[in-house]
Image 1: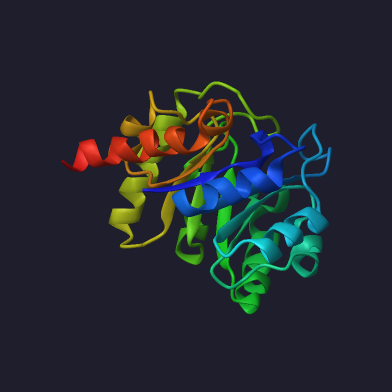
Image 2: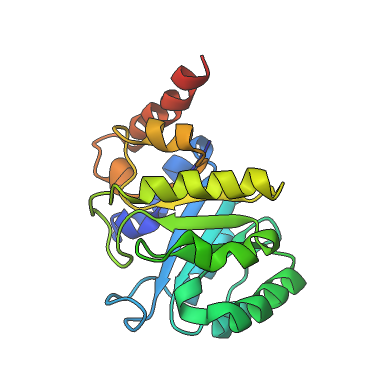
Length: 221
């Protein structure tokens, strides 16, 4: 299991300090970019992302909740292990395939995200081309929402396709993940979790992360 604190939920006045305090204890950080068109909110811009990239050695995931993710390719200073995640709903099949090629040319990992109401069958033809499939557990745009229960079925559906097609993409769940549901999501086949409120609304960020990691230890044990 990999956990990535989602900086959208962090305190913007002390975000640098929070990154430094969490960096030794997590697998990386998750950064949302929003354009107030694809979703009704504005998230971090390229200058913020690039500043984080320049000041941390850990892995980063950038989640493009924007109408034209192609325009961000040359604006972001990702390192080769980082993940560039875009939305199927923003691109459709033709643009998605072209965008994957551009991301690969940069040496980055490719992530494809879908909203809660988008069916897994829509992206089946893309599964062999991506490293990460991100299932939104909430309607994208805002931190702190409750997990939409029927998204759990999509994890099982994706896991079955992964086995049937003999693929190795990782299943991520973004939104509404916390210590009360992460065990079930793990058992269904997910293994990558951006976590926002579950960490940043806790009085002790590190302890909150450790509690989430401990869930996997109990399952394996």
